[in-house]
Image (spheres, rainbow, N blue to C red):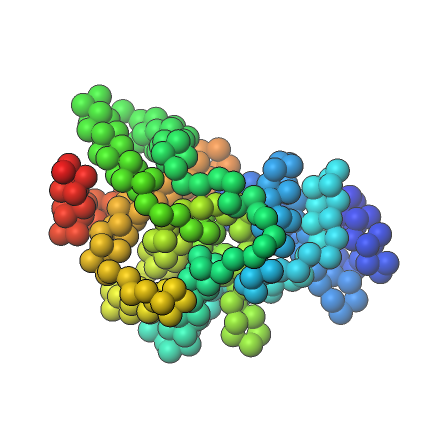
Length: 324
């Protein structure tokens, strides 16, 4: 692979490649490499999956058209599924929070910038078509996530023999109630994994979004939940509230219509439950299939969030609405 990357980069840059560093792709099966050419660096991504390759190029073009900061694409190889793109640096928001502390004013400014980007993605439109608008978080997608993530990796894999058959039936019915309600709501552009590790902080303290190839239509709350309830960066409760309020204010500015907060927060909680069940499955998969034990502690953390949210007053109101 390294020889293939070297040939690909040198053919497109017409410069000798000095070094290649393989980067850690987190829980992803995709590969990323930093390539060094004299005083300049680029990122090369590689995937075995043609759909993922095509979707990255398609959605990068769309986001760039609506002025969302994303890496620039300089060249790609359709046969090898390689993409040469600008280097977003070594500073994901996760790392910056660890260095500065979650209470710092700088971190607050960065998170406010992030929630404004969510609103901008949702309420900006480009005439250019995008694959993101051909797929959605609908009932079938939510059940797919149950089968592939929760059932396979958490229930049958990570927590084998923990659940009884009546437990599973109750959990499945509960999940079904939630997703039927979520799938009936209006849909907007959704990054799908809008968390701190996918937000790069540039030298001038601007955010740049990566890992957007799985974007689709989804609930207004989905990316907000991914950001604010990120397992990698636990935020103080007061900051969470401030960020949600700022998002609602930004949406009102963009649309000219106020957002009813109580209803918004009801669906926020339902989205949080669905998202954290999905996350638990993703972390279990990273451990069981990819051999990455560093993700094990996040599984009970996700499930604890689900249990805590299930006890909330807003959720009780939401479930009452479902039963009615």
